Length: 450
Image (tube, rainbow, N blue to C red; front, side, top):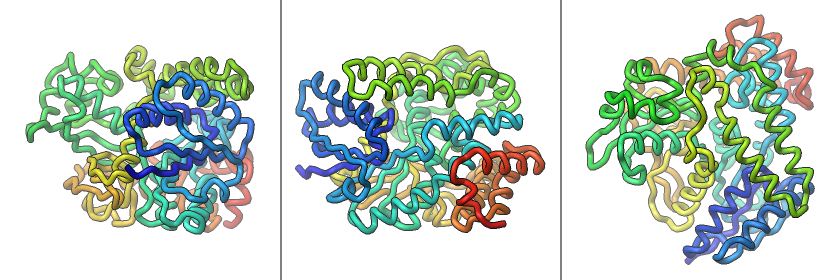
């Protein structure tokens, strides 16, 4: 069996232990990865994460993984077979700024959706483009699995340098498909899901088993329909009107006013920052695993808390609190590529004709066949007018954001903010841009021309 070296960029990230835990389980069954290199510019973050990994490895009954940590990107990339990119430019402190600037202007404050997502992308694009160049120079044969947000934009930017060797992943679509399948009594492993969209903006349009679509059954059953997270968030009437089940992030578009009214606390980013600072301050102490576990539980409980509160949806279901979607998707992609075992997975790739009316080079989030040759998108059929309208509007903003980061154009950045469906005024867009330029370190240097 082929063994690979996996390099994790953002190796000091909070969710790295989740990936490590999944790799340990895989290794117990003869997994494909036994050599892991963690790359992170912050040695203290690496120390804290390594302490958790040591605990997980000691508790595992299977083989241990070889783990090395480094703060040097070029050193970490040498010999890489697969590069897993999960960086956060600006850290959680940057996410706090992204969210709070938007909230002060009365628009949705979320790290990847709307104004916050544009700010996040503007400072991230130059960094990931440089990283892609280093991968091309140091490990040109490596596959890149991108989880860095905004995942669609970042995958598109990295693809400009690395071509088809970049696959973007997100756990939201697979989580939706699994929850919907369970709600109608299907085995999620056997569900053939028709999902279409771009990252954090897509719809589940069919769930087939043996060629029979069970989504109409789910939409017609009010009890089953409201028994899982998306059903409770969007409500039976709206889902039946759509005839599909939206990705949870579409809640910001469909219930904008409700979410803004419920967003009254310190904000999720500020809460996460406080929780995770306690963990990272532990460094390599014996309490690291306990602190990480507590912070993980708080993180998962608070996910979409404002949205659920706005709709009276109640707490998350217990099976959704483990954070398992992220490593499950990552490991599925790794297995498919390394073992050359074809798998049908929903990932982010260049469109290549999968969705009619979208440019071939644009990155979409659709079912793909993933194997040793990469990810090939499957044809989804045409979008509805409703779906096409939202997707094209957001994609236009993403294109302006990429242009702004590439050229330094503040005018392009203003067009990105003003054109987004969740920013309701050019005046607000101007204030948002000015506030981010003042508050985000380094952004003024990126946007250095009119």
